[in-house]
Length: 401
Picture 1 (tube, one colour):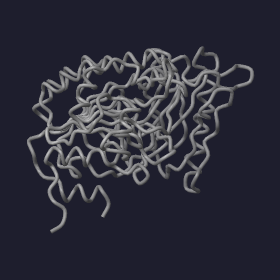
Picture 2 (cartoon, rainbow, N blue to C red; picture 1 turned 60 degrees about the horizontal axis):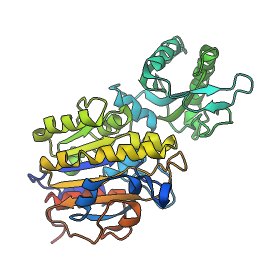
Picture 3 (cartoon, rainbow, N blue to C red; picture 1 turned 45 degrees about the horizontal axis):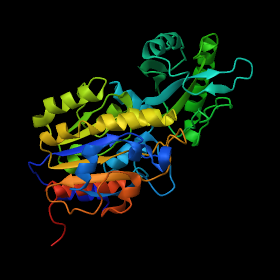
């Protein structure tokens, strides 16, 4: 019996609601005055909450493993990310409301900037072009046709788009084309499994035509494909935990992973202010709320220490609003670390706080990486967090006789 089966067996009803507040890319590294972004931020509400909570550090997937956003969030939802591997293309497609059938193969696309002479990538995100520019470029890519394949291309947000192929004998098990650093050329799609050879040929043909259409554009004169995958058959959140779950997020990818596990995803606007308004509006309709804050991750990837600090401080200001609603359990953490110093995701553990009226307090009095080392939770994994939240909400019965 794995953890998912255990949760299916043990979950019971309760009137206590659970809020999982995720600051994307929360974990950091020391910068100014030797403090991480979280430690440098003024967070009086989180610090006050720490004195009445249990804290620790959590590993998203496994020690030393740097996770993508998909595995990081899936683990937070209690699914073993090593067992349930989800392609980013599926999450982006579901995030913008596309339906994926058995014959669908989805990829997340990034517009990028290529050096016209050498063809190497000089900016992996094409200067973070605005969404309306992304939509214009997607319209050009819709000209591409390939025999025997239905092709859907849709803008997502900023420099991101979704490519969905629909046809016979399409398989996943494919490499990505983003080399993950500048100064290198986009890579070809290669099959990892023999049955994926046809899919690789089709995707490389699509990319060749896309590069030709984008050749004279600036700054987005190229593109890469990531997370090429089919929709997996995941057990739903309702079946596993018995929870009516709501995802409050502004970015499509996170809406996608929520839909993948069966959460409802209302329109939560574009800001933390509209997200908290949505939480209030939906409070009486659900048992569980996944509340996602994106820009901690974006500013970490930009190497912008001060801006990441600012988002953390902005998030701290809504803690009283959440507590006024009376959640039985409030969890605060991140999906993965995105330290400003690395400008990328990293393997570092995440600070985690669990607050409930039946919690055992520890001696930690502030919310930060260094302080959380001394917390009573110790070192746990993301998959441990939701069972702990369920237990503190009175939603798990006894195991065994």
